[in-house]
Image 1 (cartoon, helix red, strand yellow):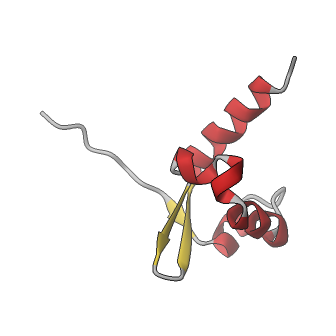
Image 2 (cartoon, rainbow, N blue to C red):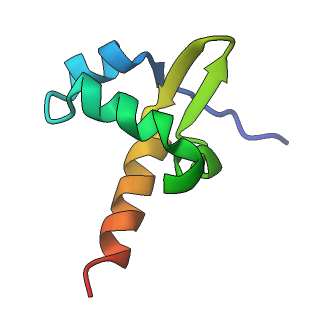
Amino acid sequence: MSEQQTFSYLTVNQFCDKHPAFKVGGVRDKIFHSETNGLAKSGAIIRDGRKVLINETKWFQRLEAQNQGSGK
């Protein structure tokens, strides 16, 4: 049996509207540097042509993991 997965993808503007702690410019900067900051590897963002979508669950999982790693 296969697990059914639910995906929640948002555009940058939708993500920032839903989570006002994140500003559009800051999120776009993170996306621009996604190959070096771990966002691409984590699967938190996907690209569909020119459109960039954010997987909310993976974005926050990556943020938590990053925060736990630097809390020494």
